[in-house]
Length: 115
Image (cartoon, rainbow, N blue to C red; front, side, top):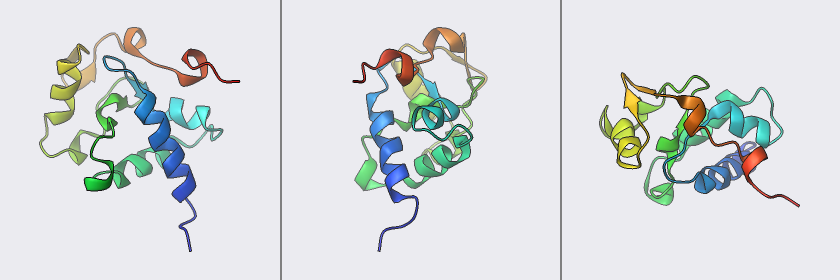
């Protein structure tokens, strides 16, 4: 029997895989795109469940909160790994927050061509 949220979690992972290098999105943006307007926390739970071998390539470091804070950083192997990965991709991070978040924000509802 599948867990109740398994399909939603898989949908979250598919969206996260689409976030371009050098861009970030928020938990709420993903939730809204997937039809769960108030589901930001569920997106966070999905990403928290993604750590491990099965989803090792998932770019979870590109998902931040709605103001650009790296609220998921404590789920990474080291406290600075999330920021380090974003900086490597050209996303400026200062004091655990994406600088100029709006400039780097990626919204799949706007940027993906969906038929």
